[in-house]
Length: 137
Image 1 (spheres, rainbow, N blue to C red):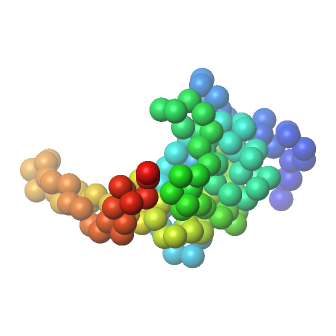
Image 2: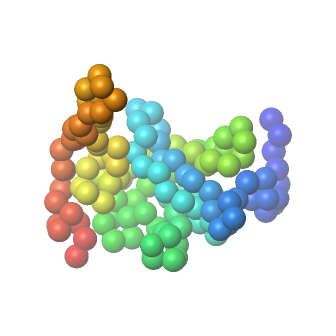
């Protein structure tokens, strides 16, 4: 195993032109992909230090500590970097069972039902567990 010490491990990440890298949150127990977000150096560093999911919100222009409003924090058990060093994978436990701002377990709740002609329909496959109005005040 090639361990990288100090902050040099952050330099190994291939950040995009905006200083960001995509981050996938994966349920450590089931392997399900719960969400995809962005991280900057500060977010990844804080995540590694606290072992809680921290992202960079492009719409807010600031760090987003998952669960800061909803209480649905992510306990990180493992941080991985892909073979091209340009995607981060967080293996997590989703506290409260809701990862999506729509109140669902996963952000990937829409499934394409193809029509065989190159088209199809998106079908909702996961229920709302808690109405967003109850989560975000």
